[in-house]
Amino acid sequence: MKKNVSLSILFHPRWERIENNSAVLCLRITVNGQRKTISLKQKVEISKWNSQKEILNGNDAVTKSVNTYIAQTRGQVHEVFRELQKNGEFISVETLKSKFLGNDENEQTLNQVIEYHNKTMEGHLACGTAKNYFTTQKYIKEFLNTKLKKEDVYLPQLNYKFLADFEMFLRTHVPGENQRPCGNNTVMKHIERFRKIVSMAVRNDWLKTDPFQNFKPKFIKKDRGFLTQEELTAIENKVFTIARLDTVRDLFIFSCYTGLAYSDALMLSQEEIQFGIDGKKWLTTNRIKTGVRSTIPLLPKPLEIIEKYKDHPRSRSFPNRVLPMMSNQTLNGYLKEIETLCGISKNLTHHLARHTFATTVCLLNGISMEATSGMLGHSSMRTTQIYGKILPQRISNEMGILEKKLQSKNNSVAKEIKIGS
Image (cartoon, rainbow, N blue to C red; front, side, top):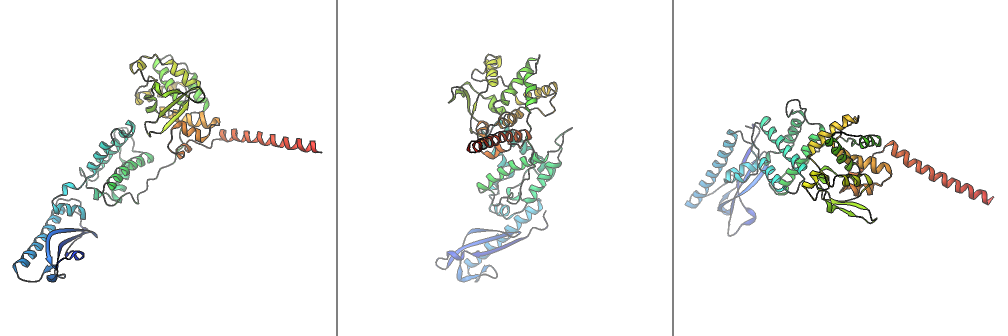
């Protein structure tokens, strides 16, 4: 029970809609300063209304009936309020109103809204993204059970303190044996997904005030990992006697030279390989994650890999697919073996190939930010700029070009002066 919950009740006619000396009787409930007005199915004579006592003046049968109704209604509100307190339920003006009117089943709960979101998003989110929402949902349920000792809460219970407590829970909660709590950016990702769900509830008018209004997620900026040219070459030239490692290496190298994310490489079809404006083969596909169109000229290495696996048994099982892809978890597991065998000190994952394409293959070789963004299928240049690292090698390359241009101009000027003299 919350000791600081205050309740006040006020009966009054609807003064702005008086007709023939009568108006509808209204009940105003105030809980902790928050007000809700309920229009009651009862009319009162304005000339008889006693604003101080909140009843009608007079002793006639109609007046007595109205005053009895007011007293009974007041008693019912207090009874509902006491019941909520007794059961230890969260009390807000919305929940009290709903309970009083008998339609509290229409009050949306947090779990109901999460389920609604996940159901409506089916088919609209990539598998990996949908999986992340389910993980966030799991953490919310664990938070409710372990910290609040509840199965569910009504949406009006979501406030700044709820969010702050949930954030602290994520930072300290140990999911299982030999596991660590979430890092800062993982916590913020869960908060970000939670915020999208709550924003949907606000848009649907299930929640009047957005509890995230003053709650700002704080991400820690981290450099995107990538392979250097030397590391990429080491993996590319490594001879593997184990067939599965040879295949995984090729799938990884393919994305290093195309920038395809795992889901896009998995679903890559023969129809998406087309001839471009230069008469050479290009990949033209829509990114599964964002739906943004991506166009990528195929370099010799990915063309070689496509040719190598056109008759692979796994490719024949899916005749329209280009690559013999496996599950992302399996692929990343095998990449750990390749990481060790090639002496790579970085965390080798399939997504690292996309970062390598953006940084080492494109930007460090003079490909513009705009062209790189188009090939990566980014919806915003700001996303591409994350990869646009100010690397010493890139600065050296670009300054070398500038140095040659300046030297050429100086030589031309000197030559003109010499001729003029």
